Structure formats: C-alpha cells, structure tokens
Image 1: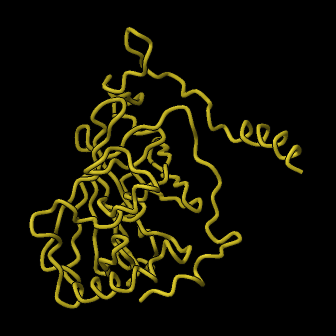
Image 2: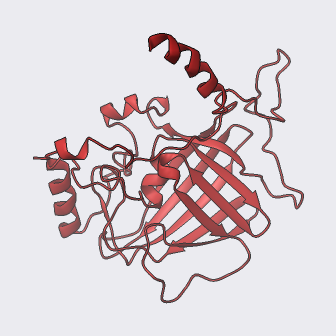
Amino acid sequence: MRTLLLVVAPAVLSAQWLHYPTAGVPKTRDGKPNLTAPAPRTTDGKPDLSGIWQPVSRNRGPESLEGQAQRATQFWDIGLGLPGGLPYQPWALEVRNKRMANFSHDNPDVRCLPLGILQMQTHPMIRRIMQAPGFIAILHERDMEYRQIFTDGRALPRDPNPSWNGYSSGRWEGDTLVIETNGFRNDLWADYNGSPLTEAAKITERFRRLNYGNMEVEVTVEDLKAYTKPWTVTLNQSLVLDTDILEYVCAENEKDTAHMVGK
C-alpha cells in the first residue's frame, strides 16, 4: 500500500496545477519576478486587478494558516491597528466579548458556512480576481466561495434580499475601483473574534493596485446599528505566482465541529 501511494501521489499533485508558471510576469535584470513593476492595464486603460492574491499581515508579511495561531492578523481582529479599536455600540461589544470568551465557537468559518465579504477579504486562503468589462468576480479557495461585483452602472437594490455577501456595485474613480455593497444578513461576523455586522451595514471598498505585485484595499463600514460611527481599515494583498486555487470543501468529511465545545 505504501508503494502504491508513493507512485500515485506525484500524478495527483501534477494534476492540480500547483506549480504552473504565471504568464507575462515582468522580470528584473537577473530574471527574477519584478513585483514592483507598473500594474498591468486593461484595453480601456484601467488597472487590471486580475490575478491570484493573498492577504498580507500587518505584522509578518504574507499570512499563513499556521500564523493564525498568533491572532495578530486582521482575520482575527479586523480593527487591528485602528486607534482605539472598533467603535462598538455597547450591545455589539458585549456580543464580541461573549464570542471571544466562547472561543469563536459559532463563527461561520467553524461551521463551514459562508464567510461574508469582510472575513473573505482577510481569510488566509488565496483568491482569484477575474476582471471583465462590466463585471468582476472574486473566486475564493475557501469552500469555493465567490463574489459578483457589477461595474455596468447599476444602482444598489433598494429592498435587497438579505444574503451573506450582499449586492455589490462598482465604479472607477481614476485608478481606484470603488465598490459599494448592501443587503447583508443580520447575523454576520466581521472577523473571527466575533465583531458583529447587521443588516443595516453598507460597506465601501477601494481597490488600488499599487504595482504589479501589491494591492491595497481600503474598507469603510457604515453600520450604526452595531457601531457608533463609520470606521475604515486598510487591508493589503500580495500577488501569488505560479499556482492556482484548488477545490476545497469545508464540510467534506468534517470531524472537528463536534469537538469544539467552546467555553
């Protein structure tokens, strides 16, 4: 049996495109990827956000699943580095504290449920951005989640059906893609620690591809039901080369939830 596994494993890995070279990467004089080269542009002159991206920790560079244990990332605390922290309403702070005391037992990520767009932005798994005229899609490796962002001029719905990711409409302001999203469910988590997000929330994201290998995403959350005022954080993404997203299904053969008893 061991011999069979050794023979089969290389074939399986090669079929997953884990090491397929990224086309069109600018190079330095010594042949290495030039991640500080100018950002690519589409035929209409806009920055092309397409590519495989991953979050960059405020403290340690590209995030890893192992690095989560230190909890020094915006996945755990989206307000990390924000002076004074998030401006919680009293009830929202109480909810966040109870969730933390219960070791985030009911976080959607633990329950194999959709993350919502804030946790999706900070989750350490990679994601692919696909940019086309009038439409941008974000395909996330975690449970094959996706976002639809329409850039065809449509307005946000006035009476949206509440959903995990809401409804997103984007427009270009110079080289910045501005995305507005509403229509959220009333039970979302903004981060793994349990900062709440309600159906009253409106989120504005500003995507800026700074150069070939780096992107900045400024996120403003307006949710006066859960917070005393709007708040803004900056998330950073780095381009990942020579790989692709893989199929990942959280609920397949899931064995952990029963052992996560919380407090």
